[in-house]
Image: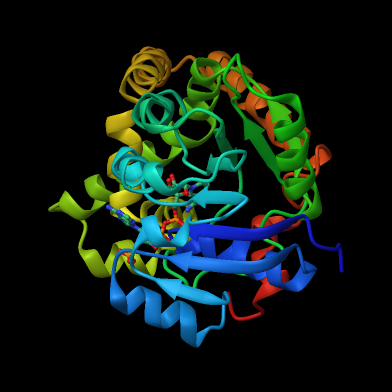
Length: 309
Ligand code: NAP
């Protein structure tokens, strides 16, 4: 038990991320009361069945009344609408944060609605899975993972400190950067890999010379790892692409240039160029393992988790 950090926390959106936060708040006893809101009665009912909070409502505006901390965990394209709905009921002195995967767009959508006296601190926990909905969340999702804040210039240090302590209680490591930089970094480490995965799985699906059953049967030869990313939530990833357009297009242009270099090296049999690149990329993998961001088990530790895999 970590002890109460906020008297009342309102969670707007109770999918994978919102419900994982709810589970941690409960397990660690971080709030006097947790109010949960989501737009659909079905999801709300499921959250109640899972006993993720203390009170439940489909009205985001109702949920934030008297809350000391409000966490918005909805697809980034909906964050402006949510901010507009909750703004009139936000308590002066409350902290308002989000978990969206893009930051400049979320700030542009939400900040204009935030009343004076409310501390808006955009955030993004770098943790997740390809699953969605309240059943997909789990306790400890954020442990050992980074949570990036992109505070606005006028951000109150005391409020920032309180939010930092909240994420630290969930086991996260905190970093701060400006929103544009966040969006560029995430474009390369997260958004581009997902787009490549969606594309490669789409290409395989369109191939006429290879049957679908062969794609599935022989998938362990590399394809399988792309299918996990390509199974991610379509709404979330549509919104990420639309709301981090510039950074993603910049990274895609770089990617296409580098792919053309690789294509040329293969066409002209330039084995030394291929070997040099493949050696360089292997070092990056080693650094990720050394930084504790993945395990060094063969096949990404899959066999250790599932002997049948
Ligand atoms: P999710 O599992 O699909 O849950 C989304 C939640 O948002 C649901 O409660 C859903 O409500 C609600 N919602 C959807 N559209 C809405 C709208 N128009 N207005 C109000 N509520 C709406 O998604 P998630 O994976 O938790 O992602 C939530 C946020 O976290 C996104 O901004 C995403 O970019 C960010 N994020 C995701 C990951 C990841 O790996 N998944 C990691 C880090 C950050 P209903 O079910 O009631 O419709």
